[in-house]
Image 1 (cartoon, rainbow, N blue to C red):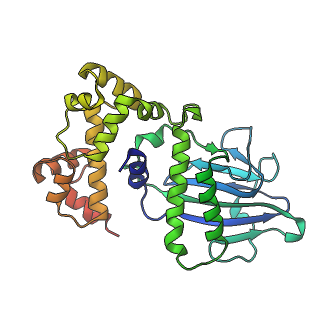
Image 2: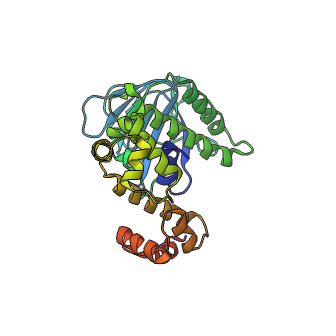
Image 3: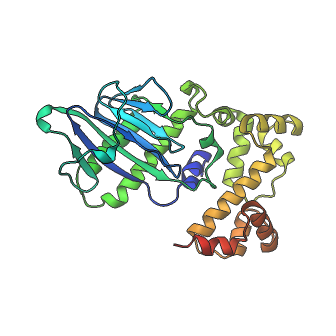
Length: 306
């Protein structure tokens, strides 16, 4: 699995959710944030204005645009560039199907249709890439793949259809991948911090990919430098400068991240989890896990059970 796919797989806790909102007439709401949720808003029809918390200037969001809020920050939404004063809870939705809400009088004309939702996060497992993103990432329409995903979301949220419960989470994961891809593009203006440069760097990117492909290997800085085709000293300096972590610090972080996921999402024995993340003995693995998270693997598995 490549690094970007790993970011999505590792960060989520549970199934992502979404709702379709159709709005008529004049409207404006404030949507409070949630630090446990990375939210998004994708416009299917119409135009609206998004007001980030703490900023005076709104963002104009048009058809096919997506706004991603990786840290769960709140924001205002309105049909005009005037900051809204009431919350969404104060609005009264009309009739709608499952996951679908209609606001306002259709005779006033359709103002906007959008899909909004979020990804519940395990912040302890979230990849450092996410921490480098700003409060709100505005991805403008233009990518054909993203347009197809939005078309699929529009269809699946328009009404209850067979298989929708299984298909919708897949579409939402695809949406997140396209957003993160956009953040890593050279034209993204550094929205993903050093990670865009780290993945684009032939040496550091190769080392990161190798660690994600095979976290169980007995990695050393020398082995990673050889993978990157750099001298050990040059590689260590460049890796740290781009990712914010020293090479072996990242290896350990990723191993513990993978271990948490395996303990939570599988029934593998601790011995097997240890082997899959590069530890030769359960004792050494348990010691590292306790040092990282303050409790041994089995206790984490028990307390994390629903």
